[in-house]
Amino acid sequence: MTPMPAPFAVDAARLRADLVAADYSVDEVLARIGDLGQEGLGRNCTVPADVALGDARDPLAMLIRLFLLQQPVPAVDLAGVLDTTALAAAGYLALADGDATARIDIRPYGSPDDGASGWLVADPTPGLDHVVTPTAPDYVLGASPASTTLAQIAMRTPVGSALDLGTGCGVQSLHLARHAGRIVGTDVNARALELAALTAALNGAAVDLREGSLYEPVAGGRFDLIVSNPPFVMSPPRAEADTLAYREANFEADALVETLVRGAADHLNPGGSLQLLTNWAVLEQPWEERLRGWVPDGCDAWVIERERLDVFSYIEMWLTDAGLAGTAGWRAAYDEWLAYFDRLGIRSVGMGWILVTCAQREHPHLRFESWPHAVAQPVGDVFARHASAVDAFQLPTAELLAARPRLVDVEQETIGRPGAEDPEHVVFRQRVGLLRAVKADTALAATLGALDSALTVGQVLAAVAQVLQADAAELAAALIPELRQALLDQLLVLDGAS
Image (cartoon, rainbow, N blue to C red; front, side, top):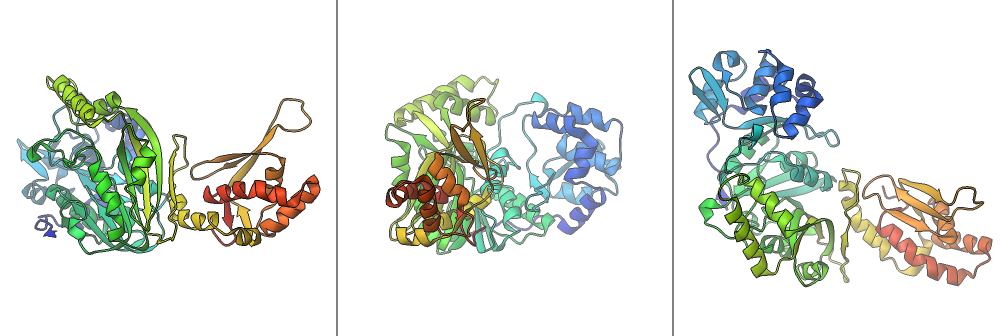
């Protein structure tokens, strides 16, 4: 393990007090720049927010201009707002010609669904107002759509220990601090660790930060939860000095992701889980079959492909991300990526979520599916309940018949032709989570509708068979697989589950 860099030369408690005094929070910033200003920043355009601020020179307006709009601010306007001398000495501000310019982005962060709100410290947003420059190799990314999604899919049940692998600016550690007793954050990028340390200090989060690649900084250690949005981009290999540390790591194709999945069992406590937001190469071999070979012995796995990109879309996305759009090097880089993908046989790229759990079952449960449909975030609870859902799915038939499951967060819809006396079919649809739906015939609809934890599955099946004048054994044989699937998909949960 390589120790993290020397402490930053900033009084984090003083900086936090200054941010609080200026009301530099998500709600107050949004109130000042408005929805249009926020939407503009989402497009990397500062003009709407600048117009909303007008001529204001109060502390909050100055911080918005300094950090979010990346504008030079008269140093005199920051007197009493920030300790500009200390921030400049740390390299976080540049002072010249009476102006202060931010070298970092200190940004309010809000997460109302779990309370992980505060501030994130990262490098300034690239490409603001269409000024595109190549991204520095040690660039530290702030809260991105990917990191936000990972925070929303991560399990939030209390755990003793958690690993934030590839911590970046430290955003995942803020969420983990809400429910993990001990947190370790790792990164290969020393600058990321420096800024993550300031993020943690500003938010009062205790994070053990370590420098190193993949599992190296935690060799011999085991955790209850590992979360990672790793540098998974499948770019052609390049010199270490030219590698963008926040997104790529010079592994061939998706070997980095494979390494993380294969190594999970050696770094998880019994029952512990690894959660990844990542991508994988789709070759001639079915992707499900290929990823199945990565899963360690004794582990369950659930892999959800959320999106499939053709190689052209994938390459264009990451070349733009690197700041090459509109530059002379765009086409040469594009051709280099195409040749690399062609050599490796990459036909497309799957993007999605991976859950690996050290379940230690005699017969591990492996599930691979494509689910490009809308979901109701956050879905961390869906992953947290997955192990118990698998337990229920695998119950011996006698135990399943004696169980008392119930529908949870499910709406019942009837669909049929206008004026028809009876519906053509009934749909049971989840209101939360992955928003799955089951189209049910009369027997299944009657069975699901009667399961409210008061009666056993066997009692309900017997009653339905009697009402429908059907053979009880044949009805049970037909419906039990459907009920198992409903348990696995979490439309049904066993009594006592949440």
